[in-house]
Image 1 (tube, rainbow, N blue to C red):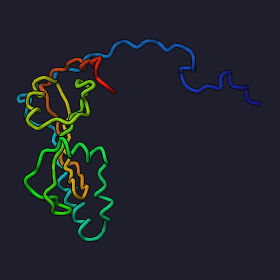
Image 2 (image 1 turned 90 degrees about the vertical axis):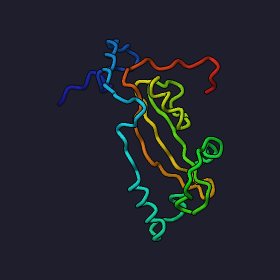
Image 3 (image 1 turned 120 degrees about the horizontal axis):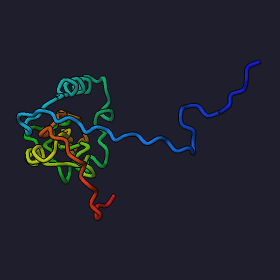
Image 4 (image 1 turned 180 degrees about the horizontal axis):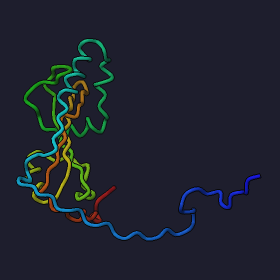
Length: 169
């Protein structure tokens, strides 16, 4: 007969016992960047977009599968979208806009916010590294698609911005 286990809790730390404090992580190494305002690590989703449109027009996919923008995305497109000179690829209307979202640890509470394209150059010199996501949204048929992602920043790691006291959650 096997001996009974001394503890029913698996893992190295049992609940209720304090964990050992870990030493602080080493700060990230600065990365050499020649032009902070030029996109790097660019991922263009044009081929995926073209394939999705081909499936849509050839009947392999329903309109509701691709034209299903979240209500918050539609509201952001209405108030913060930057107009695009070409029509919507799905419905051919003129209501197509792009939204530019920024994400990064250094942005602190401002990560995940929408920024205008002209603001990105100034941000690239103020932050070490942040990601940019460009999304197109049609306000008429609710088409939405991630166009491209890239990284900006001067490569110098910084502390995250503090959350202002008056910032609402």
